[in-house]
Length: 231
Image 1 (cartoon, rainbow, N blue to C red):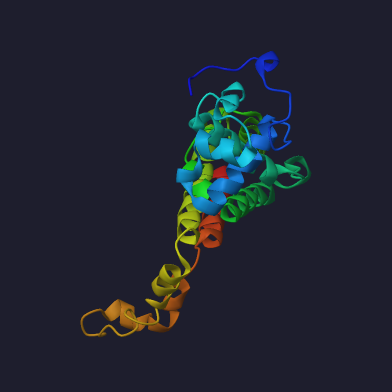
Image 2: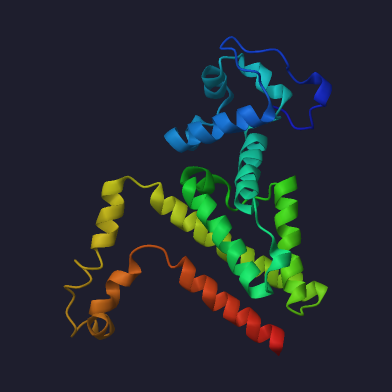
């Protein structure tokens, strides 16, 4: 696929061999399904064409590259996360918490897509809305424009970083996830307190290391922002 924006009038309007009427949404639906089932290697025009029952070249009329399609899929997740979100009705801290939880939850629901795209900039409508909302919440907290942008960057990177980390974990085969989780009650719990005194002292709490630390990290960050806003 090549770079550049595809004019609307060039896009395919007749049904494919399987009777599917192609559109950007239909292609994104298919991409999300294929990546969810088979991982990033499934994001190819050949596999998409086969799944949609069309010549792969027809996809060029909607997306210029598989990367362009990946960004559209990522923006879809942002849109679904933001659906029904009304930050103007919330206190700024509550709004940021809800913002973070929504994005994290949506990416966890699509872990293989999140692992590919959580660190990307989609440059599309849903992301525009999300960034505008996040900066707006921080301005309502009392930050000036520069600090609002700086703090939003730290906030969203924390959210997306945890989303990507948790997504990568969820994308592992079940037996590997279970083995990693068992380590805290197995190998770590059996270490000698003579050689690892801090682990020995905290042994009964080590199972807390299994699973996601996102909720704790989010509250720590929100508290830090609240302190900075009142300083």
